[in-house]
Length: 291
Image (tube, rainbow, N blue to C red):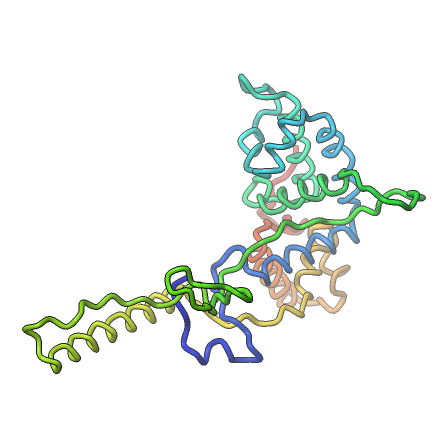
């Protein structure tokens, strides 16, 4: 994120802030993933399954292993996902068992990308287990078990202008500052041997060059206005597809080969976006046969 945008960008479309399209943690993507998991939970027993074997393995972990996983998430155990047959030297067998339980869970419910469990889905699974098993203090007696629900980790997005909170003070000037990143151009002061006209020419030339370079960097980063993510049609369809539903069950209006091609393309687009590999169609001629 480099500096402040042109003034018109921050007021376009009811104050929408531009975001970078390839930012993996932008808000629409987080919402799309959350919606996908919520829909998947409506059509499969994915949440009870998560809170069964993986949660059981979590309970058996030592306090040191729990603290490490709570701090680093899936990154703390992902190197162990190939260790189901043998435990690497020096590794905690119980931590390996927890990792393997998550991997089996991810493959069972098709939370994979290119044959590996999707990192973001495993992060959410870990957060959900931790939250569900976290003891709570309440003055009311618990009459029923806590309802299972997804817990998503907080994600940041890159957007400009990066507005500060109320009372933010610049340490150098002591003055209030509205934006985190401002454009700073360093220009040497007027030299004694330099005329005022030459100084103004040099000053304007440096500013013009910096402005062009700043705009070029923004365009290269593909900043664009964020659209309101209100249409979940394809996310819902993709969740049904991953749950094992056929195209006819998902959308009875699909009748022709052209309809099926459009459906496949829509599924491919949303699966690429949330980074989950779609399951193979039973009618795919290239589908690998099980022996």
